[in-house]
Length: 379
Image (cartoon, rainbow, N blue to C red; front, side, top):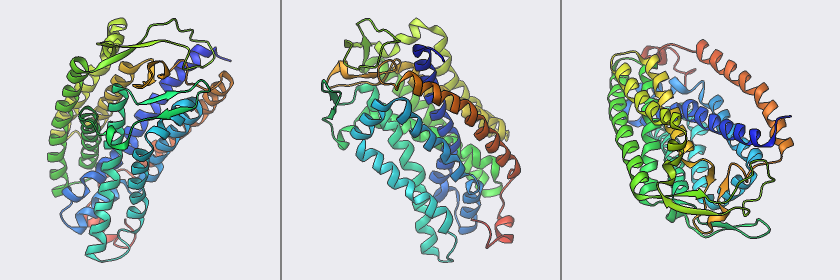
C-alpha cells in the first residue's frame, strides 16, 4: 500500500488526466456540435458533420462520467462543496447535455426541415454550453469561491449563479470554448472533404487565433490583477484531512509561485502555445491527423497550466480563507485511494485500447455520397 502523501499527489495527477481526457475526447465531439449549424449549410452537409462523431460521442462520455465519479470518490469535500455552490451551473450543463442523445438519435428520423433544424441548434447548445460553463467555473476558482466550513465541516455557500458570471470568469469561458471548438474544427477537417472541410478550416483559424489571444489575456490578468492564495502554516502531507487546520493568505503573484519553485512547470504554458500554433500550421497545410495530436497537446498544456497554478489548492474560498480545499485536506481515506488506484490501473488501459480500436475501425472520410447511399442507416 502506497503512503498517504504519495496517494494524494497521484490522485491530483489522475483527476487531471481524466479532465484532459474528457477535454480531448468528448471535447472534439462538443466542438463539432458547436460548429454544426455553421459549417453545414444544407441537410446533407449537416448529416456529414453529425456522422463524423455519431458512432463515438456516447463512448466518449465515459471520460465525463469517470471524471465526476473520481472527484466524488477521491475528493468528497470538493464534490460536495462544488456541486452545492455551482448547483445551477451544473444543472445548466446537464440540461444542455440532454440535447445530445436525443439530437443524435432522433434528428434524422423525420424528414422535416423544421424538426431537423431545431435539433441542429439543440446539438449546438449541447456542444457550446458545457465548455463555456466549465471555463467559467475554473475562472471562479482562481478568484475564490464564496463558501465556508463550520466546525463540523458543514459547508455554507454564500454566492449566486449570477455572481459566477464575472468578467475574468467569462474570459476563462472564452478560453475553454475556443479551445474545444478549435479542437473540433481540426477533427472535422480530418473526417470531411469539400465544402465542409473548407468551412472547418476557416473555423480552425478563427478559433485557434481566439484561443491564443484569450489564453494570453487570461494569463496577464491573472498575473497583474488577481491575488492568489498561499498556505502560511506548516502542512503535514500525511495528516488526516481537515480543511480548517491551516492558515491561508491572499497575496499578489501567488498563483505564479509554483513556476518559480519548479521551473520545469513552465513547459506546460509553453506546450499550450506551441501545441496550438503547431496545430494551426499543420491543419492549414492538410496534415490533419498530426494537427489533432498537436491540438490535444495544447489542451494538455492549457489544463495543466491551470492545475499547476492552483496547486495545492483545488477550491479556494473567498469567504473564509482557511476553508479553502487543497490536495492535502480534501481527500478520501488512504484505503479508498489505494483501492481506486488499482481499479484505475486495470480499467483505464482497457478504455484507451477499446476507444483506439473503435476509432481505427470507423476511420476515414464521411462524404455526402456516403450519406445519400445510407439515407436510412446514417445519423
